[in-house]
Image (cartoon, rainbow, N blue to C red):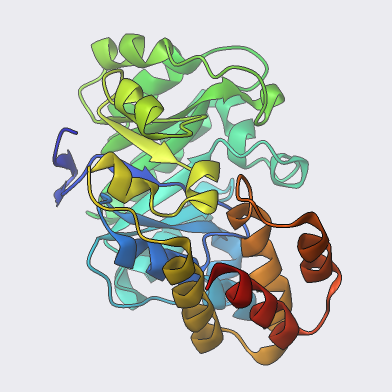
Amino acid sequence: MNEKITIGKLELPYPVFPAPMAGLTDPPFRKLIDEIGYIGAVFTEMISIEGLIRKNKQTLNMVKDFSSEFPRFIQLFGSNSDSFVEAVKIIGGETEFQGIDINMGCPVKKIIKKGAGSYLLTQPDKIKIIIEKIKKISDLPLTIKIRIGFNKINILEIAKIIEGSGADGLIVHFRLRKQKFSGEPLWEYGEKIREMINIPLIGNGDIKDVVTAEKRLKQTDGIMIGRAMLSNPSIFREIAKKDKIEDKQIIKRFIELMEEFYPKDMLSPRIKAFARYFLKGKDFPKELKKEVFHCKEYLVIKEKLLEYFM
């Protein structure tokens, strides 16, 4: 694995990144991934710029920070360029995040209806304005996460605009918005984009194992892993040729971190959200799985999971 990747003023130790995932990469999970290590940086889940400006309680909980070994990026979404500026001022003045990522690739309808996420791919001029306004008031490294297009491929046009507007890095999920998370990602665009731009290119889409990761690292400057990380948080160690951490250690540590962070009434839905992905591909008995997901008592769920993995 190629070591180090530079984004803006940050020299990051590894070109492999955990993807920001709504409702999943919360502070406990980010802390877990940071402790597992061998990543370039950790990313928050999508954070609403309007929620951040209004100091919405739920939004502030989502961006709660922690001491970490690796740099921390906050991922923002929205559509109003002036609101982006206000949100970035808050980040620079009131938080210790070391980088900013703008989500311009989310395919979810409720985000698109707000003119945010992947809808911005239909508005190249707006992308330019947002990036330029942010760079005028902030020296924090700025990455932009996009797809190869909304309903049609326009990645080459958008990539040049993103670089020309001053962004420090480009993250590409190699699918169209209409594909969501299905169909083959078009990784062949990696080489085409790399020939055009001089900022780091990080690729995302269906990196399921070490073999795929090594292949994709030859096509881009770095890679970002989403769903595979949820079922195997130790994948970053495996890519770096380090020993895998046992599942029992991972589940035990995640439960500890979750209990430190969430009030009691939030523990049951949060452990289920984690388990839904973590149990994929594991020989976890079907009947036991049913018991876990139908149970409402957190302590019972916790006991059943720990009993199985221990």
